[in-house]
Length: 112
Image (cartoon, rainbow, N blue to C red; front, side):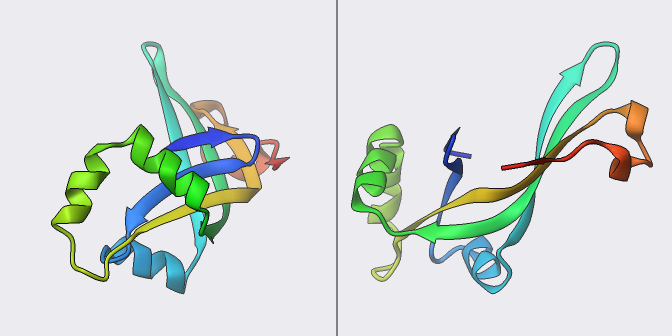
């Protein structure tokens, strides 16, 4: 993940990558953010939604500024390769712990 804010969860990948083709074919995703705990299995935030690919020159400039190593990576990429920026802007999230294991459907959902 690159970053998250009120407008969504932002990611990037290269267009030659298989994950890019997979997301183009099926943009439905589920994300999992895990917070371990010394007392047990920890806590997860599960987020489901649909990927939106973005073409935004300001966002792309920010990406290369935030992650300068991408400049070197793109130098060795195929000529037609580019960076694909995508986000999950709308969906549903819930928290999972062992308390609701096998009963995830009971966990309160939050729309975003």
